[in-house]
Image (cartoon, rainbow, N blue to C red):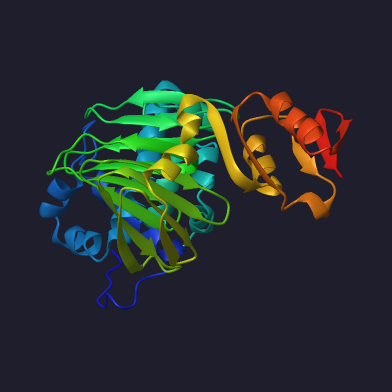
Length: 341
């Protein structure tokens, strides 16, 4: 099994996921993953090599949890659909570094991939701990620990309730978390290159294409930033009224106050509130919730400020503001709305 002697020379992300795959394939030979509730720390206590690897950095644990989550779901499905045993698992191939593993970098990883290539449709592995919403959707879920998660439009996340920690992998979108306090089981949200850790508080995480935003309405949260090599490069703590934006290892924290944070999170009540918001940002916000796109054709009006409160699905009310309030010209092309001066 691959060992790393120097913690200052952490592996690349693809190497890290390969190592995690090797460990899962190796440990499964001893039937250590047969239980529905898997305690990784208990397993580590029985295997010194695995314990040393797991504790090199938090990113090692994250890599293992990501692959273990896919492996567990696919293994359950293989029991129901054994005839599909060697078909590619689209869900797994969504992990970019796992695609590189499939090239045959290690025998153990190949065996692991052969085991989890059991289905050919990601939708077939919708276990009860995977939650998602469509565009314009909104969903509130209660977790087994008493925490509540509210999913915004076009959001997908995975929930893993482990004996020693509670882990959420936010794959895309935005969610608000009301975490039940448990000092013995930290609550962690993994989103891109950041990990948010709390014991009990209320906050939201929004995973955008190029940045991740964390907003706190109650309590404090710790954000660990990972660099391209999965190394924890920075850690910050933010509190009520703070908004943190992370992007490629950098973090910007601004205290906007609780009123502003709650306004930005008004989607929980089904609203969008603009307060002197640039038109281009307002249009982008509406596009998150509607299949019809708002397109600004004239760049001269992109930065004009707009204010107002709208239902997320009431696009026509927003259009009326632009025509009646600003005198903008509206064209309709197919179902899209084109705005010009």
